[in-house]
Image (tube, rainbow, N blue to C red):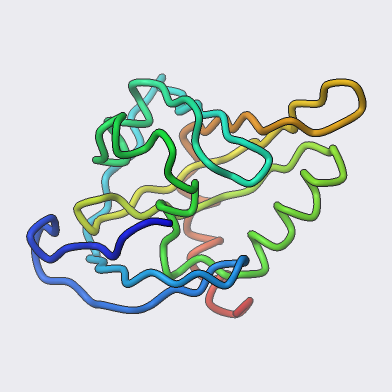
Amino acid sequence: MISDMKPEDIVGDYRETVLTFYDGTRRKVLYTELETPYPDGKLIVSTTTPEGVIRQVNRAFVEMSGYSEAELIGAPHNILRHPDMPAAAFKDLWETVQRGEKWQGYVKNLRKDGGYYWVKATVIPNVRGGKVVGYTSVRRKPSRTRVDECAKLYPTLR
């Protein structure tokens, strides 16, 4: 379970909403219009349990998300869920990886400070003995053209 976001962590003016996740849990999120550009040459990497709980993160993940490593380890990956992301995207992600297949897509992630950053994400199931034992996610810098396309498309997929 992740806690609601706190106003003292947010930079600038923000909006507030409550997200309901795939498993039915809810979280109050505070978000701004402040984008953090994805840096050239960096890869964000994390591993999770089959349920999506974060096991490992790299330094780029910590830097881009604004959370400390201690805050991320043990948290559900949806700690980064931005309210602009359509539920359909995550439904497709989960259905794909639970079949043992690779998923790719463009994701707008929510930072601890209420800002956001876009990634091109690849999620790969970790399969041992024919069973999914977790997932590895690698994110890289997306093209601005694809980000602009997704920013227009995603509101229509609610």
